[in-house]
Image (cartoon, rainbow, N blue to C red):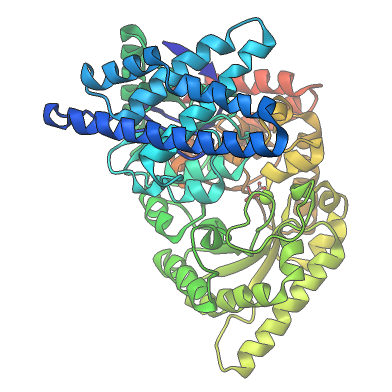
Length: 580
Ligand code: PEP
Ligand code: MG
């Protein structure tokens, strides 16, 4: 048994067989080979060894010719390893005696060898482990044929373990077959994490390197509550997690009874509880959980899930499905937030050193007006179908907001000329997710109908911490007093200007922050559909007076740690069943 600590990004627990997608994207199956297929499997192995040997010989000859025998000798060492009798015997025994597939036997044996080398004190020798991984990759390439086994082609439920998953790869995961995932890379606020919540599967990211320690088919537990993964658990641990699974199931059943009850505090204050979605198909989950509306529709995922650039009609079709399904409930469509970790099929410009500070979000839209107009046309066309609001992401300056609104007005004129109907009074809002926007709120608020606080980015831009970098994850804290002050300032400014405000970042999907946010004056949140029952339950368990007391105490504390400890204690008293 081996236990690894990472960052919990999507709650819940899953137990299942691992599918390992290594750096190169190989998926190593642990098939069982039938008696009558054993000879065929051994022949596949021989064939792969022969083909890899030929490749190495070719490389050796070319390098010897161009650089001299001395360099060619590097490949001779690889060849010797490839032809080593003991190694062959070990791989063959796994196939013949254990009935493992050739790729699984190769991977298991070579990884064992690599581990021995890696643990040697001598640095030169320990680096030989790389040579062994190279050999493994070459053999797997021959045995598996295509390099990147497509994640979406899983056909039995499994736990995906990978070095990293991009938001678009994650978006393509089929939740029927992916029980959970864990990645070596990734940070707490990454969009990969957000998609995992949308898929409603447990996920842990940023564990550091571990893929060499695990083989496809190993039993793995992903503990998305504590950010832990456990490889080959012992009986006692397995039992403990089975109990945990049961606890989650019964909690979900209890919370489901709140579905048709309002999100209202004990003293009768109504709270708007909307849902964040990335894809139109999530609407069903929103309806099932009784969402008041869609507080944030991340439309850029239309690009991330598609092979070709979406047309105006593709946009319109997606939006009209969402608006119609929500039947008259408010739908806030956020314009494209492409860039940084969400590029989709769009051609990348120059490699950016700091993509989160680069051509992202509204900046990208304002530089690609065809793209922007196409989307705005679709949003406006959908606006006659229900209560649609449009929202601009990552507004940093007043000029940006004015420019975006000007393009919106131009698009309205074009539509009018083209004979389309749209809601001329459509509400226009912006996200507050950059500290400069908080500083300029008095002016910005005069030019919008509503604002929404995106804490995921606000934390990153306030604290100078990349939301997707595991190495600074400990600094990425919603509870940092600086972040709390920004939020408090925003809520006050919005109240003074009488402009509706909501929080749609992950902070509002975390039970312990709800009393604090309500105490600061917030009355509207938007969270992933899976978080709605818990958040509603917290709202229904508190009074505004109690929340105001919590907020005023939290705002006096000096550090994120103090705030976290304090809020954890409070939520333990308010909703003990939600505290893991
Ligand atoms: C945010 O930044 O909090 C937000 C809701 O937007 P996204 O996570 O899509 O950047
Ligand atoms: Mg954001």
